[in-house]
Length: 83
Image 1: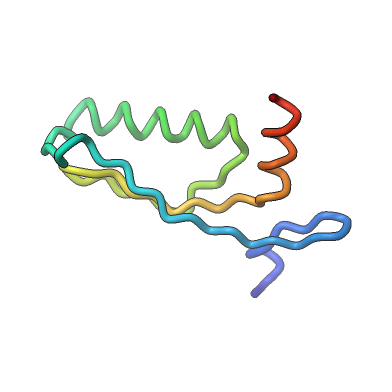
Image 2: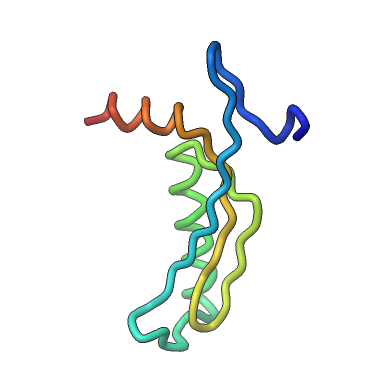
């Protein structure tokens, strides 16, 4: 693991990658055209707000999948403070 692959804090180092899949009900083939573009913009906006780095994302006709990188410590701290 290189230093670019980890997030370091005073007493912790983490490397958390998540594979996330969004699928419409019954996997209907509805993700195309303007909807695909809107979903991409929404995911980018949400990831920026939460401090999550999207490594890779793919939109197919029946689902959207992304690989995301986040540090659990910073995510938990932000979540606890915002509650």
